[in-house]
Structures are given as C-alpha cells and as structure tokens.
Image 1 (spheres, helix red, strand yellow):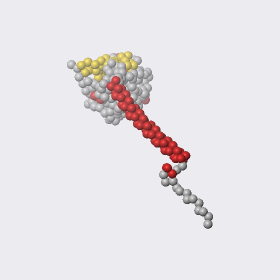
Image 2 (image 1 turned 180 degrees about the vertical axis):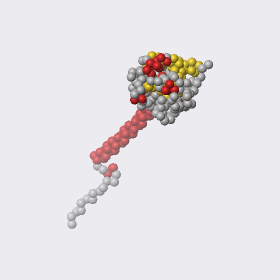
Image 3 (image 1 turned 90 degrees about the horizontal axis):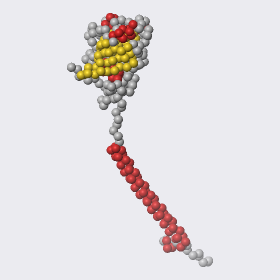
Image 4 (image 1 turned 180 degrees about the horizontal axis):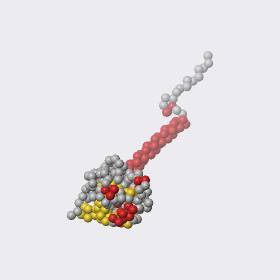
Length: 267
C-alpha cells in the first residue's frame, strides 16, 4: 500500500491564511471601511448643505417680504376698482362683468359730451335707472365711448350710439336689467339705454330722443339721463339720419370724441 497524501486542512481563522493573502484581505477590508467612512462624510455634508440652503431660502423670503415695495395702484383706478373721475384711467373696450358701483348718491353728475357735430351736456339721473347710469359713467371714464359713432339715426325719433363695433350688435361684455319708467316718460333730450328687446339685455348702447316719434316709445328702456344744453348738436346729428334700414347707417356719421364729468354735491 502506498503512503496516503497529507490531509489538506481548510483555514478556520485569518491566522491560518498565508501571509500574502492575509495582507490582501486586510487591505480590502480597510478600503471598504474607508469607502464607507467617505460615503458617510459626504452624506453628512450633503445634509448640512441642504439645511443651510433651506435656511438661506427662508431668510431671503423673509427679507423680501419685509423690504418689498408696496404694490402701486393702476394709474387712474381707485382703491374700490372704480375709474378716477379725472379721466386718466386706461382705455378699456371689453369687460367680463358688470362694473362696480361708482356713483355717490350724495353727488350730482353732469357730462360734457364732445362730438364731431359739436358739444352737448347731459345730467345723469341715477334715481331713474341706477344700473344704466352707473354703467354709462364707468364706461365713459374708461374711454369706452371715445371714437364710437351714432350709428343709428332716425330723424324725429332717436339718435343711437355706444356700440364698440359701431353696429347694433356691439356689447361691452356684460348685460343687466334695470328699472323701466312709467308710460309717457320720454321727452326730447331724454337719454335711455337701448336693449335687445327683452328684459336683462341692457349693455352700453344708448339713445337720445330727438323728436316727437321718440317721445311715443313704449316704457321698455331705462332712462338714465337728460340733455341740458347743446340741443343744436342733437338736432344736427338728427338731421343727418336716414329713414332706410332702421336708420343704419345715417347719411353722415358723427362720432363721440370724449366725455368729461363735473361732479358736485347735491344740495
């Protein structure tokens, strides 16, 4: 029988591993520990950096809130959203809703209406048509009517304007209902809001009674004003009208150039 080979013994501890291999294992363990320590340091630094960043953002926000300039009001617009009576509000030709109430019941409002036919004045009558009076006042201060025409003129009946498109379909973007007068309330120079023939369709279009036929209108239109001077201008616009196609277009078209207001306390 031959001599059996020596039994190969499996290492049971690092001491049993040859020295070169032990050195490699130890180096790997040290490298892994160093990598873990480096990752831990990076994580700590990242967390600290995030905390510092958040603190800086909060501080900047606080400083901004404490030092930011106060919001400047829009030129020509009062704190309640109404246009300034000075007439320096920016022009608007479309609105998404009926405007805020801007008339003071304790005041009297007189408008000077400058047209290419001349100038006439009118007194606002908010007691008769409060929503129509307010709408006309606010729209005029936003220069809504500037440049619009008296697009429908029927001699001896009415002169009609106030459409942003200079057609009978023009709208300011909102509609509303208002009071209507008793029968027989229309007189020469009465200013009333036009509508589409049904309640709740008042808008920006208005008419001025310019003759006896207009005085016979049914009481379906909200009165909000009365011409007080410049009746010759109303007569000039009326004379340029047409009896064809319901007065559209007149033989000569006159435009509104500007509307200015005089406001005085009621006595």
